[in-house]
Length: 471
Image (cartoon, rainbow, N blue to C red; front, side, top):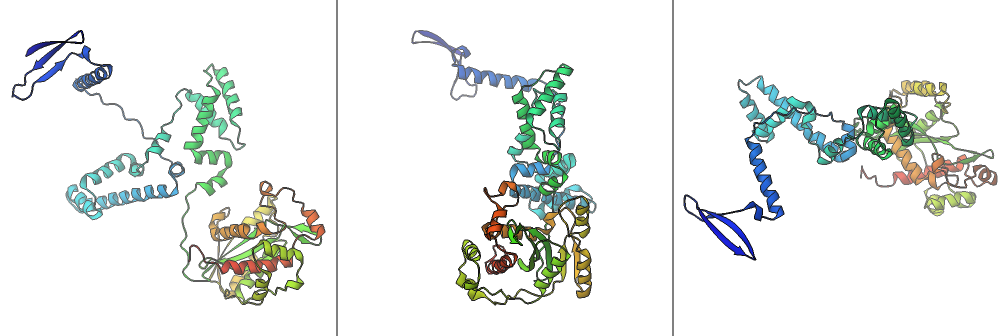
């Protein structure tokens, strides 16, 4: 080794030139003190890594895997991404099931792994990795969680005591939906009584915000109830649509979001509908002040028999009817030319899918406003005479009749909101300044017959529009 000294800009630097034993270019070893700060830190990091490698490795205890909430995962990544993750996990589970089945037939497990890997076009190490994850963590180990979800689940407010954390959760997860300020006041009292350090109000706010973001299903169940949780987070199956028209009719009632005039007073009428699931058409319907067994039977009769569009005479209708027609985007002459047109939508259904009559009777006993819902006797007698099967849906499941519910939403968006007495479905959607009593007294609301005539034409235009799903 040769020592060389250089003088540069008034400072002495010592270098050591190390000759390689096998020839080649010599290496220049520079003093650490002569390096800049960034180079010194890099050198210290490299030396520390060498030292750590020499120490005996201590097996760290593995942290327990936090259980995965599928509703939380779907809320984080979205429905499409969630379904893709589930599909891939199911495919991995299918490989493992096939592997276990073949292990009983082959003497060596390696043969079973090779066969399954070749069949599913994956490598053998990949299949082994799936098997190990499943044996260690179960089905959750097969879920490929995105980094976004993993980061959210790792948020823990360590500045909050564990007992204080339980108080926050217990106070916030109540059906009376307490405000965060109330929760913080309760936390203050608890901490002072137990001589704990009181967390700041911002810390409590952040912890509750983390709960709402990472545990939306738990928040919904605790603060909004089981019914709302079932609607938003409970897993549901998709029913296969029938292939033929008139195979399945769904029946339901809907209270229109508009007032009409009847005997000088405003009323919100009910629509009773029979909806053909295969063709997405409204086969039979009727309008009435109250929905009951009679309206169900009348709407059913309307759907079975041949029918014609009502007569529309421009000179014989009131101005309020012409104004309503104009708001709906129709021409009076067009409606007059369609008068008497016969619709091809008729015939007997094979099966009826309707609400549970006992369910509505129980609602009446509880004092809810659903008078006159006892139509099960009429429907059962009608079905027995016409040899039609009836299927009653599970109570408290509005999504079971999703076709009807979706049609009623379309009816509101394309029809009810353009009627002169539109009031919205609740007080928040009620138009400002609406006085239905004054409108009824002045004759500025439609009558039941006028509304039914306009609804007939509305159904015709709906059936004459290309359906986005059916084409």
